[in-house]
Image (cartoon, rainbow, N blue to C red):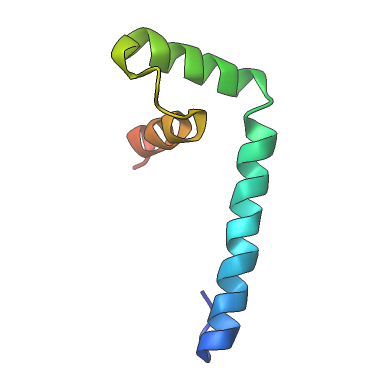
Length: 65
């Protein structure tokens, strides 16, 4: 986030959030996403109610360093 006043930081946060939304929209259409989601459902069959975005979040957090 940039230094500066609250308005500048808020505008930057809105742009960043929009970029994140776009990344998820694009990623969820790819084969890698479908494989991740299928694997999640296989490993955690009782959690099929979890949204696809949250499943991807879980995967991303699990592979971080």
